[in-house]
Length: 124
Image (cartoon, rainbow, N blue to C red; front, side):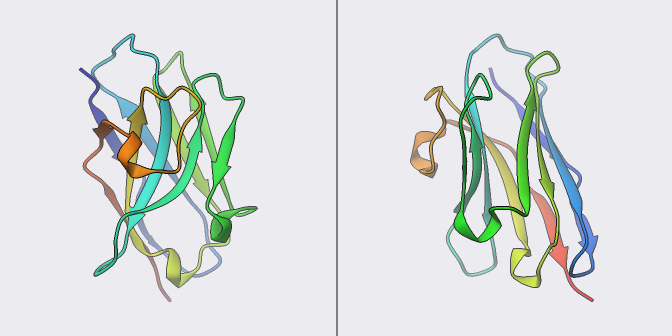
């Protein structure tokens, strides 16, 4: 059973940085690709970034390209999201998710496993 737990959220000023982490506490041997999504109040959950099982393929939502970087450590069963140059519009609850589609996907419907979310607030 895949059990995802996010950490690293918080309050940051515009232009600042945060690093989110997601660990699979289930310590499964299931192969999966990982993604990050976010949901702001009153809005639908939207794609942020994804990374293939082998780390060879990444996808980013246009507004976060060149600011966010997704990475993974398969030996530790963790995935990270480094967020730089944060903007107030990045404020949301951020979720990590896992999919059996080994290349990853931008569609939330492709993901079977989700973490509980971590709040990111960008404000002065």
